[in-house]
Length: 261
Image (cartoon, rainbow, N blue to C red; front, top):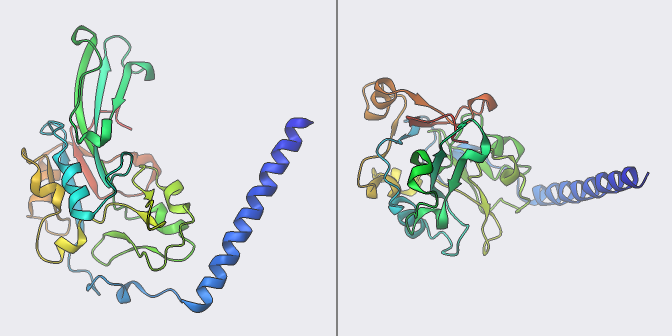
């Protein structure tokens, strides 16, 4: 009985919180109607490109320059745990490699300070680095759950957050299956990778791509069949993260191991 009472209280509290948020959203929307995508601050009103990322795990050396450049370029909070892009080190131990306890995932300070191997060499089956960031999904869950339209997709396929609309409810953070969002500690709004959209509009590469010393990161137009990104996908065994969720990510990995989650 105590367990049932506890569950009922939890559901009741959740419904009260949801009602309060819904009421706030409704009140907010009375004075600030949601704009169409074409009216957002993107300077793009029709599809000129269809941007995507390509990551080559075989080339990533775990230097962390991408995560550092991202923080500098986009004024991401310097404190730990706040990242728009980061690098994870996967270490697979000898033995039954399909067991979770034999898969070690580490990302100290997002990889900015480098990595120290925590598993003795004799116990390692294999080890590799995996860059992570927003997947700019075509069927983005974060866009679907945002109650005020603050998270939206531009006509050229980039998922952005409009700070002037975001109410900091955190729905999008919970909905993202890739852990690519956080609540900005100062602005109190959702924050994430913008694909360095301000640079794209000037014909520049995203900061993380620009500083990668091995060419492990690339970007391009998925509509350009002869472009470098499409050719990369065509000529490598590329996969996306968590394909079973049907979010249609626009981030493609070469040499993505099944242990990566």
